Image (tube, rainbow, N blue to C red):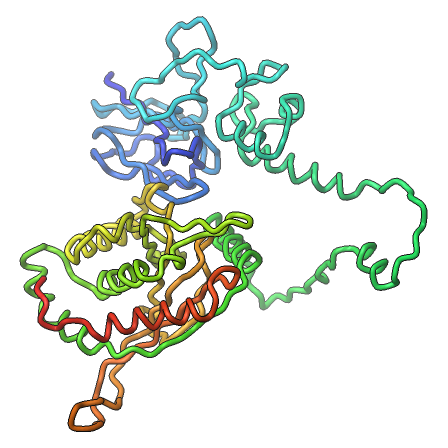
Length: 451
C-alpha cells in the first residue's frame, strides 16, 4: 500500500506552528494532486494546504482547532486508492506513527522546512527545562521576550500532544501572571500629603462596562479568529498613533482615458487586466521618493526611514475580512510588473494561497474605498507604518478647466484621496505636501505614454 505523509508546511521564517481550522476532505474521500485538503491559520494569514499526490484520504491525525507544529505529519494519503478501514468512516485522530529508531525521542521542534519524511535531529540543551520537557522555538521566543525562566516554563500546563506547551498556553500563563501581580496589595508606606485629585487617580479601579441585557430579538455571532486579529490590530493602531487625515480632490481624467485606450491591447499582449491600482501605486512610489519620511516607522525615540518601498494593498476577501498583501520593492517595477504583481497577490489572497511573508514588511499602504462606492474615508494606519492612502470612487463631475483662453466648465473624472498619518513624526505640512504631490502626478499623467 503506497502511502504519502501530509506534512504541516512552514508558512514563513518566523512561523513554527499553525492551527487547523477546517478539514476539506474526510477519511475515504478521493483527492486529486494539488487539490486543497485543509485550511490552516497562523497569527499572520489563513491558507489552504494542497495534496502532494492523487489518492484517497486514509488517516487524519489532528482534529479541527488543534495547533500543530511545523513539520508534523497531519494526515496519510494512499496513492493506490485504498482507505484505512475505520468504523463509520470516523476520523482517526492522533494515531501513533512508526518512527525510525534513534538515540533520542522523535521531536520536530527544530524542523525548518516541510519534508515528506520526518527529520530527526539532536535537541539543543537549552530546549529543555529541568523537567526534561521540550519547547518549540516560538514558545522559547515568547518566554525570552517576557522574561520567563525555564522553571516558570515547566510550571505551564501544556494542552498540545504529549503535554507540550503551545503559544496559547504560554500567553494564558502570562496573562494570569500579570493579573495576579496587579491584584497584590502594595506594602504600606508612610502617608504623605497628596492632592485629592491624585489620590483618586492612583486608587481608582479600571472602569468595567456594565452588563448588557440581550433580548430574544438579538442574534449573537462570535468573532472568528481573523476578525479578532483585525479588531486587535485596529485598536492598537489607534492607541499607538495620533491619527490625522488630510483630503484632496484630484482630476484623473487623463488616467481614465489612458486606461480605456490601452486595456484591450494590454490584456492581449500581457494576458492581464490592467486596473487603476498599479497606476495609483506608481504615483505613490514616485511621491515617496520625493518625501522619504512618509516611508518610515517609529522605534522609541528613533525614526526608521525605510530604503525599500514596499506598498501594501488592502484586499477584501469573500468572507468580508480584509488582508494586506505587499508589493515588495515596488520602486523597481514598471507598469507591467506592477500590474502582474497586483493581480497575482489579489487573486491568491481571495483564494487563501498567500504566504505569511507576502503580508509582511510593508512600508506604506493604500486602500481602495472606491471599490465599495465610497467617495472618501479616514483609513486606520497599518502599524508600524506611519501613513495610509485612501482612494475614493472615480465619478464624472462638472469642473472648472483652466485654459490659455480662459476658464471653462467641462465634465471631468474626479476623485478624492485621503491620507491618514501618524502625527508623532508626520506633521500637517509633510502629510499635506505628500498628498498634494500624488494628486499632481495623477493629474499630469501622460495620456500618450506607451505600455
